[in-house]
Amino acid sequence: MTTTAPVGSVLIIGAGLLGASIGLGLRNLGVETWLRDASPTTEAVGEDIGAGLSERAWAAGAAAGGGGAGPAEGPQDRPVLAPQLVVVATPPDVTVDLVAAALREFPDAVVTDVASVKGSILRGLEERGADLTRYVGSHPMAGREKSGPVAARGELFTSMPWVLCSAPQTAPSTRRLVKALAVELGATVTEMSADEHDTTVALISHLPQVMSSLLASRLQDTPLHHLALSGQGLRDTTRIAGSDPGLWVQILTANAASVVPALHGVQEDLQRLIATLEAPTAPGSRLDVAQLISEGNAGQARIPGKHGGAPKAFAQLTVLVDDVPGTIAHLLSFIGEIGINLEDLRLDHSPGQPVGLAEVSVEPNRRDELVEALTANGWKVVQ
Image 1: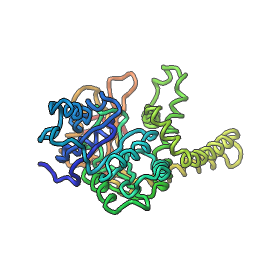
Image 2 (image 1 turned 30 degrees about the vertical axis):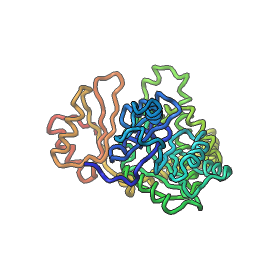
Image 3 (image 1 turned 60 degrees about the vertical axis):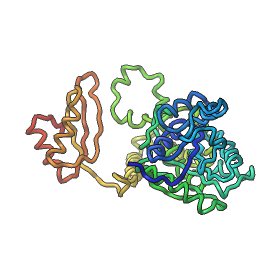
């Protein structure tokens, strides 16, 4: 069923993961969507997956007399592309130039960008004298470890935060249109200033990337038979270390003013821990280590829980599962059949063994019931 879209026509500049995902979501809503990318191949792939119509192919068809891609009425009937909304979904180092150019090229359009830094982009536009009444910066807090249009998903933004950073000059109608875009794509909108946004993401997004990369870098010369002993903790803390270096050079450079204070805070904690462990049996050393770990407990407990609500403690149990197709599906089906809601699931493998470990989280008052049911039906629960 087609949903009425908040905008009549959208041009997406940058057909990578975010741009193509926005395009897929909009096309699912019946929105006329166009793609523009510096790479002809990326733009063509974006069109092939259904994220929008290639502006390059449409222009070529129009020049040839109407034989190329275009809306139902034919390219010859629409010589000028006139989007209501332009979404710039490019790396941060070119975002300012492309937003400024879009504001000039489409004087009747609202323009937004989805870069992960906002303050430097806003200041760059101010320096260029851009029309900020038609611009609002935004940042969908969603992504994948893969990149490019082939990794795009129309549901990428469902239930994810999408931050809007209006400037003082931003017109209310501009803000409403970009907010509608986020809402129609299923996101949850949060509004804050550009500087507040950059300070926030420095701590919750950029610092975790740096820490993950620094930890993973320690593994470069580690013998492989040592790494074979790795548990889920190492995998969890280094998962995002596989991110694109080129993109993160741009992000960290653009948000350095906010990232550096966060790094100084980590540096102080590391120096404190190093000094303590250099004399681990000195009076007060064990207490200091315990305090550091407890401070981490307190911070972790503040991270929102399921569905973005308040953090909630669940009971865990680990089930030994055969590493064969269908076993996990069978386990999940069994838990559902006995009427217990699965709150979380984590999977791990036993090194060198043809079995896996499924860590199941449930309501504490249902844990014993689940253990009994699983055991009675032949599942091995690791207590």
